[in-house]
Length: 73
Image (cartoon, rainbow, N blue to C red; front, side, top):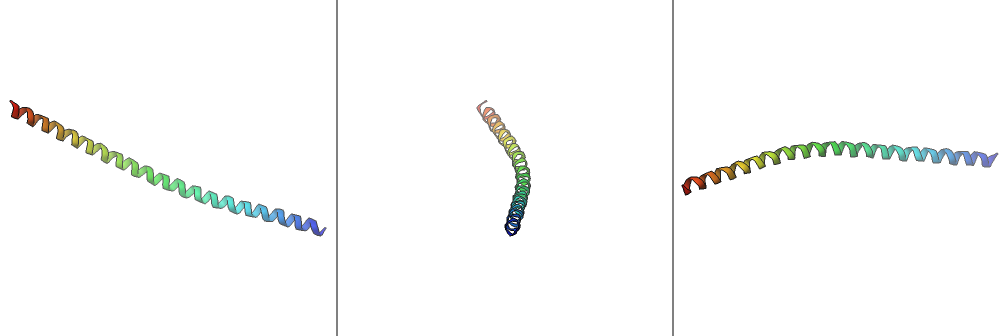
């Protein structure tokens, strides 16, 4: 009977440890998802800035080409 109690205590302790590990992993997953969401927002912001800068560069190139054509004429 004594060994049965020891076995039950070991099983319950192991299950408790497993649950605690699972909770720790779940928390880390939540943090990772939160961080991924923040990074996604930053990427979309940087994408918008990149598009705006590309439009400015295109505008500057067109202006420079028009100026070259005007001076060549």
